[in-house]
Length: 168
Image (cartoon, rainbow, N blue to C red; front, top):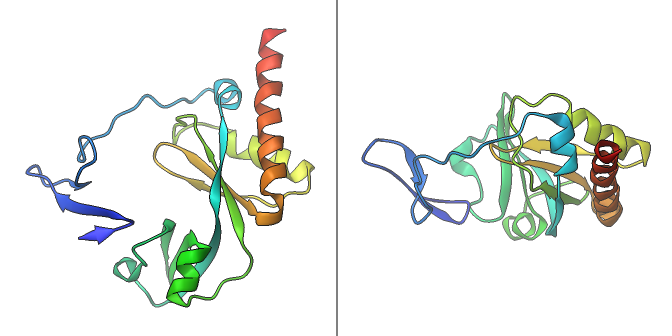
């Protein structure tokens, strides 16, 4: 099966994994829970593509476009997903507005408390709308395309401020 630009199969142990990825059925990394450490090390990276939010009423995961999909969630009404604007245009999907994605390079724990609040508060204070997506290893912030560079600067400054607070 090909999904999200990768070929997926079941390992002998029955786990679903990406062919060619190291240890496809098991990936372990130490993730961070300390808010101070997370903020000091967020290292936001602005991805180059524009992304859009789309919805397919009544759709299921097997109807996802296989290329350019960043995230998906199954909702009662159908399938909502974030994919590159280029992929949405190729598939003829409708959307409202375009977004840039800031991928935080710190390994954040799914149990960490306060990271989303700290990031969204800082972006809110600068008048920037933010949509958070938590991956298993990293958090991602989608902001309106026009605010991408400014949001990157705001989050980089937040990281420096957290680091300076600890060095005093």
